[in-house]
Amino acid sequence: MKKAVTAKTSAAKDTIGGSPSKLIDGRIKELGDWRGETLGRIRGLIKEADPDVVEEWKWRGVPVWEHDGIICTGETYKAVVKMTFARGAALEDPAGLFNSSLDGNVRRAIDFHEGGEIKEKALKALIRAAVELNTSKAKKPAKKQSA
Image (cartoon, rainbow, N blue to C red; front, side):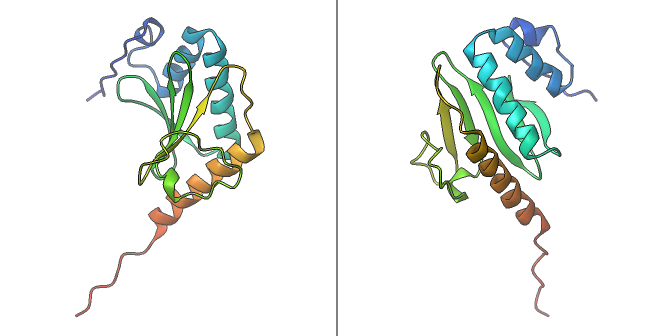
């Protein structure tokens, strides 16, 4: 059975049933402004930081990057591109990249604004830390039951 993909945007509608990567390509192209450029750059940095990353398209049109669980999402709004780390609260952030969703117990986000700088080295380190957190969780052996 084929998984249904729902999308609001015209570029995404043109690729209904396409791969998540093609849907993300469509979103970047459709935006056609600084938000598309920023989302594209973030995507490139994610792939550089983790060549084994898997791209997904969830929640009616949100790019999602996974490796043994969700690493982060790439949401686009009128004034920001938001990169939300699914388990960001558990990550060290020595460069102070997290600037949004700081009150939650699990997620943390980075809001990128037009003309803002992307601290590429620090962002890739944060992505790698998120992957390491996911893979360490996935590799934990099951607890032995006492007899």
